[in-house]
Amino acid sequence: MNPDVYQAIRGSCIQGHRFDIIANNLANAGTTGFKKDRLSFGEVFQEHISTDLGQGNLRHTGNPLDIALKGDGFFKIKTPRGIRYTRNGNFCLNAEGVLVTQNGDPVLGENGVICMEGSNITIDTQGEIKGDDVAADTLSVSVFARPERLRKEGSSYYVYKGQQGEVAKPEEVFVRQGYLEESNVVVVEEMTKMIEALRIYESYQKIVQTFDETTYKAINEVGRLQ
Image 1 (spheres, rainbow, N blue to C red):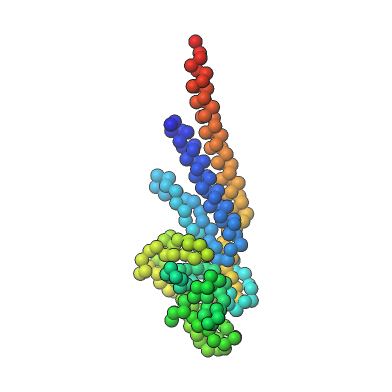
Image 2 (cartoon, one colour):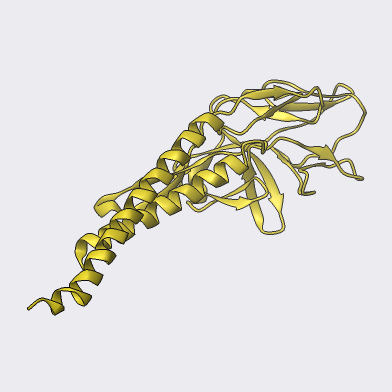
């Protein structure tokens, strides 16, 4: 195969992949705590998908069990598959009074699973939870020495693929009760990137088509010349 054709095909595949990533970002623009992905390149143009962990806007809900983090950190969640992490603080209480995610998985505090008593639930900016002014626990918030090793797992969960020694408590925690963190996707920016990816993809496709036409003529017409 002509190396120029190969480069054009590879370029169109990359733009197609980029288009899919942008489309997924846009599809999750309204997902609480969602972090957008981006396509980058390492050595010898190796493709690499990374997650932008930048802060999303905080939206006031007034629900006492909606909790947002401002700054670094992830809530720590106990799941049947092991410990998972999330920025989606849309929590609730189950029938046993345990603080859980919308998936029903317990939210962890510094002392383990958080069990609530009382109807008046308050959470201060450091994550201390009280029910009717009685301390229940403090939210467990984690940061990572190598955040690039966080992997999305669906349902707003992340799994950390590094060493447990790389998971720590942040030096400073800032919790907002009655707020949720919105996706950090900026729709206008992603739409601009999508249009750009589509145009580049179409350009590569035209190059491939031109090579195909040239090859066809070389095979079917040049041989007829006397």
